[in-house]
Amino acid sequence: MKTILLSLISLTAYSLSFSNPIDKKVKETSYAVDTQQSKLIWNAKKVTGEHAGTAPIKSGSLILNAGKLTGGNVEINLKDLLVTDIKDPEYNAKLVTHLKNDDFFAVEKYPVAKLEIVSASPTGANKYTIKGKLTIKGITKEITFPTEITTDSKKLTANAKAVVDRTQYGIKYNSKSFFSSIGDKAIDDTFDLNVTLVASTSQSPAKASVKGK
Image (cartoon, rainbow, N blue to C red; front, top):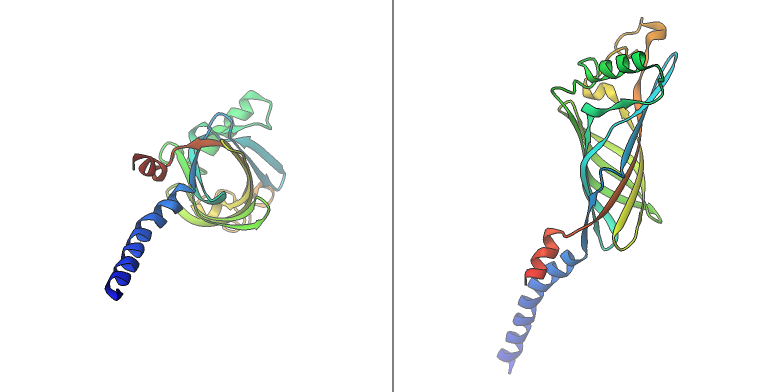
């Protein structure tokens, strides 16, 4: 009798060792970013004013587990960044060209900026503090910022605001931190990003494997 009981316990434990990971994976949902509906707005300040513009979202995905944000990644197309606050076509084109050259983002060599979500800590209803790794010009640094998401059965919208220190990525042009005597030509070391990601559900590898079973 004792032998039979031990065998049943072992069999149950063996079965659970297979079922638990599957149950966990079933709760995971991958949302593919809609690059047409998503947007990134940037704002940079200087002593004499400020400029604003956009950069397209190239690709991305967000991962939810049991309805909670757990990970994701986003790629930003810097080659197509725009300036939106300057109406004069010639001046606008001049600034766009400058932002794309080696003084700033060097887009010919580094056309894409990348964000990888490392962790997402809930701070309230649908609100999180994101810790991630941001890569610009081939340099990766940690970044922390707040975000808020809303979801339904098929769609997710995430709104985030982040402050980026450009000097951490080797962008030192007219920075008072490195050139103290530039006076009113100084540009702030930080710039702001306002990002809206709109995403829809896509079948995750985990779901596919469960369905295959």
